[in-house]
Image (cartoon, rainbow, N blue to C red):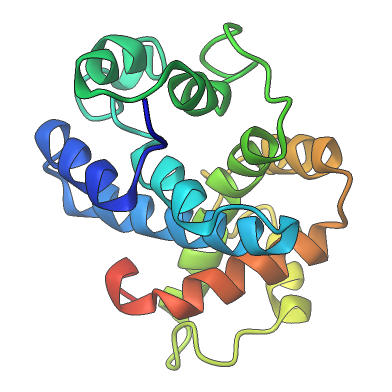
Length: 186
Protein backbone atom coordinates (compact mmCIF):
# COMPACT_ATOMS: atom_id res chain seq x y z
CA UNK A 1 0.00 0.00 0.00
CA UNK A 2 1.18 3.48 -0.76
CA UNK A 3 1.24 6.38 1.63
CA UNK A 4 -1.94 8.35 2.06
CA UNK A 5 -2.16 11.39 -0.22
CA UNK A 6 -3.89 14.67 0.57
CA UNK A 7 -6.42 14.20 -2.24
CA UNK A 8 -7.30 10.72 -0.90
CA UNK A 9 -7.63 12.14 2.63
CA UNK A 10 -9.99 14.89 1.42
CA UNK A 11 -12.08 12.37 -0.53
CA UNK A 12 -12.34 10.00 2.45
CA UNK A 13 -13.16 12.71 5.02
CA UNK A 14 -15.96 14.04 2.81
CA UNK A 15 -17.67 10.62 3.02
CA UNK A 16 -17.83 10.79 6.82
CA UNK A 17 -18.06 14.49 7.67
CA UNK A 18 -20.57 17.22 6.81
CA UNK A 19 -19.98 20.00 9.36
CA UNK A 20 -18.06 22.99 8.00
CA UNK A 21 -16.20 23.66 11.27
CA UNK A 22 -14.79 20.11 11.13
CA UNK A 23 -13.44 20.75 7.63
CA UNK A 24 -11.87 24.01 8.86
CA UNK A 25 -10.29 22.09 11.74
CA UNK A 26 -9.08 19.38 9.33
CA UNK A 27 -7.50 22.08 7.14
CA UNK A 28 -5.87 23.76 10.17
CA UNK A 29 -4.36 20.53 11.51
CA UNK A 30 -3.30 19.52 8.00
CA UNK A 31 -1.55 22.88 7.52
CA UNK A 32 0.19 22.65 10.91
CA UNK A 33 1.28 19.08 10.13
CA UNK A 34 2.75 20.24 6.81
CA UNK A 35 4.86 22.81 8.66
CA UNK A 36 5.93 20.19 11.21
CA UNK A 37 6.94 17.83 8.38
CA UNK A 38 9.11 20.58 6.91
CA UNK A 39 10.73 21.13 10.30
CA UNK A 40 11.63 17.44 10.46
CA UNK A 41 12.58 17.16 6.78
CA UNK A 42 9.76 14.66 6.23
CA UNK A 43 7.13 14.11 3.51
CA UNK A 44 4.98 17.25 3.76
CA UNK A 45 2.01 16.00 1.73
CA UNK A 46 1.83 12.73 3.65
CA UNK A 47 1.83 14.54 7.00
CA UNK A 48 -0.80 16.98 5.68
CA UNK A 49 -2.95 14.01 4.62
CA UNK A 50 -2.74 12.46 8.10
CA UNK A 51 -3.68 15.82 9.62
CA UNK A 52 -6.62 16.22 7.24
CA UNK A 53 -8.02 12.80 8.11
CA UNK A 54 -7.27 12.71 11.86
CA UNK A 55 -10.90 13.28 12.95
CA UNK A 56 -12.49 10.95 10.37
CA UNK A 57 -14.74 9.27 12.97
CA UNK A 58 -15.50 12.35 15.08
CA UNK A 59 -18.79 13.51 13.55
CA UNK A 60 -20.37 10.05 13.53
CA UNK A 61 -18.93 8.88 16.86
CA UNK A 62 -18.12 11.95 19.02
CA UNK A 63 -18.22 10.00 22.29
CA UNK A 64 -16.16 7.12 20.85
CA UNK A 65 -13.65 9.24 18.93
CA UNK A 66 -10.64 7.25 17.64
CA UNK A 67 -12.43 3.93 18.25
CA UNK A 68 -13.90 3.72 14.73
CA UNK A 69 -10.95 4.97 12.67
CA UNK A 70 -9.79 1.48 11.70
CA UNK A 71 -13.22 0.33 10.51
CA UNK A 72 -13.78 3.53 8.48
CA UNK A 73 -10.33 3.51 6.85
CA UNK A 74 -9.47 -0.17 6.39
CA UNK A 75 -11.67 -0.49 3.29
CA UNK A 76 -10.26 2.74 1.83
CA UNK A 77 -6.79 1.36 1.16
CA UNK A 78 -5.21 3.38 3.98
CA UNK A 79 -2.25 1.45 5.32
CA UNK A 80 -2.14 0.24 8.89
CA UNK A 81 0.74 2.53 9.86
CA UNK A 82 -1.29 5.59 8.84
CA UNK A 83 -4.39 4.29 10.62
CA UNK A 84 -2.36 3.77 13.81
CA UNK A 85 -0.87 7.26 13.46
CA UNK A 86 -4.37 8.76 13.28
CA UNK A 87 -5.57 6.73 16.29
CA UNK A 88 -2.50 7.84 18.28
CA UNK A 89 -3.73 11.44 18.60
CA UNK A 90 -6.38 10.20 21.03
CA UNK A 91 -3.87 8.41 23.25
CA UNK A 92 -4.66 8.92 26.93
CA UNK A 93 -7.70 11.03 25.98
CA UNK A 94 -10.19 8.77 24.19
CA UNK A 95 -8.14 5.59 23.72
CA UNK A 96 -5.03 3.82 24.96
CA UNK A 97 -4.61 1.77 21.80
CA UNK A 98 -1.55 3.41 20.25
CA UNK A 99 0.91 5.71 21.99
CA UNK A 100 2.42 8.44 19.76
CA UNK A 101 6.03 7.39 19.16
CA UNK A 102 7.06 8.63 15.70
CA UNK A 103 7.68 12.33 14.97
CA UNK A 104 4.51 12.30 12.84
CA UNK A 105 2.40 10.86 15.66
CA UNK A 106 3.88 13.14 18.31
CA UNK A 107 3.35 16.16 16.05
CA UNK A 108 -0.30 15.27 15.41
CA UNK A 109 -0.92 14.90 19.14
CA UNK A 110 0.75 18.26 19.85
CA UNK A 111 -0.82 20.40 17.12
CA UNK A 112 -4.41 19.08 17.18
CA UNK A 113 -5.57 21.16 20.16
CA UNK A 114 -3.06 23.95 19.56
CA UNK A 115 -4.55 24.77 16.15
CA UNK A 116 -7.83 25.52 17.96
CA UNK A 117 -6.13 28.22 19.99
CA UNK A 118 -4.45 29.66 16.89
CA UNK A 119 -7.82 29.64 15.09
CA UNK A 120 -9.62 31.32 18.00
CA UNK A 121 -6.95 34.01 18.18
CA UNK A 122 -7.04 34.57 14.41
CA UNK A 123 -10.83 34.99 14.52
CA UNK A 124 -10.57 37.88 16.98
CA UNK A 125 -7.86 39.69 14.99
CA UNK A 126 -8.91 42.03 12.14
CA UNK A 127 -5.95 40.75 10.10
CA UNK A 128 -6.77 37.08 10.98
CA UNK A 129 -3.60 34.99 10.38
CA UNK A 130 -1.54 37.80 8.80
CA UNK A 131 1.34 38.93 10.98
CA UNK A 132 0.40 36.73 13.93
CA UNK A 133 3.29 36.62 16.39
CA UNK A 134 4.25 33.78 18.73
CA UNK A 135 4.67 36.24 21.63
CA UNK A 136 1.06 37.47 21.44
CA UNK A 137 -0.25 33.93 20.86
CA UNK A 138 1.59 32.78 24.00
CA UNK A 139 -0.10 35.57 25.97
CA UNK A 140 -3.51 34.30 24.81
CA UNK A 141 -2.45 30.71 25.54
CA UNK A 142 -1.68 31.61 29.17
CA UNK A 143 -5.18 33.05 29.61
CA UNK A 144 -7.18 29.95 30.62
CA UNK A 145 -10.47 31.71 29.79
CA UNK A 146 -9.38 32.22 26.18
CA UNK A 147 -10.37 29.27 23.94
CA UNK A 148 -11.19 27.45 27.16
CA UNK A 149 -12.28 24.27 25.36
CA UNK A 150 -8.73 23.78 24.01
CA UNK A 151 -7.03 21.59 26.58
CA UNK A 152 -3.67 23.12 27.52
CA UNK A 153 -2.66 20.01 29.48
CA UNK A 154 -2.92 17.91 26.30
CA UNK A 155 -1.01 20.52 24.30
CA UNK A 156 1.72 20.72 26.94
CA UNK A 157 1.98 16.92 27.10
CA UNK A 158 2.26 16.79 23.29
CA UNK A 159 4.88 19.54 23.10
CA UNK A 160 6.90 17.91 25.89
CA UNK A 161 6.69 14.54 24.11
CA UNK A 162 8.08 16.23 20.97
CA UNK A 163 10.98 17.64 22.95
CA UNK A 164 10.39 21.10 21.49
CA UNK A 165 9.63 24.45 23.06
CA UNK A 166 5.97 25.54 23.00
CA UNK A 167 6.95 28.67 21.07
CA UNK A 168 8.64 26.60 18.36
CA UNK A 169 5.55 24.43 17.88
CA UNK A 170 3.38 27.57 17.85
CA UNK A 171 5.66 29.06 15.20
CA UNK A 172 5.21 25.98 12.98
CA UNK A 173 1.43 26.03 13.47
CA UNK A 174 1.22 29.72 12.60
CA UNK A 175 3.42 29.27 9.52
CA UNK A 176 1.43 26.32 8.19
CA UNK A 177 -1.92 27.92 8.93
CA UNK A 178 -0.89 31.20 7.28
CA UNK A 179 -0.04 29.27 4.09
CA UNK A 180 -3.53 27.71 4.09
CA UNK A 181 -5.57 30.49 5.73
CA UNK A 182 -8.20 30.59 2.98
CA UNK A 183 -8.92 26.87 3.25
CA UNK A 184 -9.14 27.16 7.04
CA UNK A 185 -11.65 30.00 6.73
CA UNK A 186 -9.28 32.64 8.08
